[in-house]
Length: 87
Ligand SMILES: [Zn+2]
Ligand SMILES: [Zn+2]
Image (cartoon, rainbow, N blue to C red):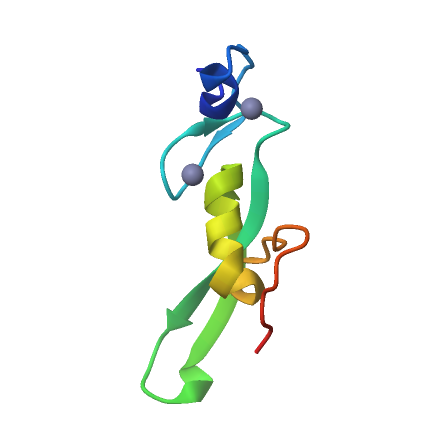
């Protein structure tokens, strides 16, 4: 499989992963690696919850979209020069 973004500009680069948002294959230069928190609920009180983090792979456009409102949750860096409000 080849990287979709690179393929669209005429470059055949081997994919190293798949964007979990749009499903596009991404090469080592295009892949963005964020985190994906998984909440485990074993009961009904807040003490019965725990969170572990897994990886989330994204293509550049999805990483940019996820960073706009979810940069803290997913850990994708917001695009340079963008005015992203931190809450
Ligand atoms: Zn994507
Ligand atoms: Zn690429």
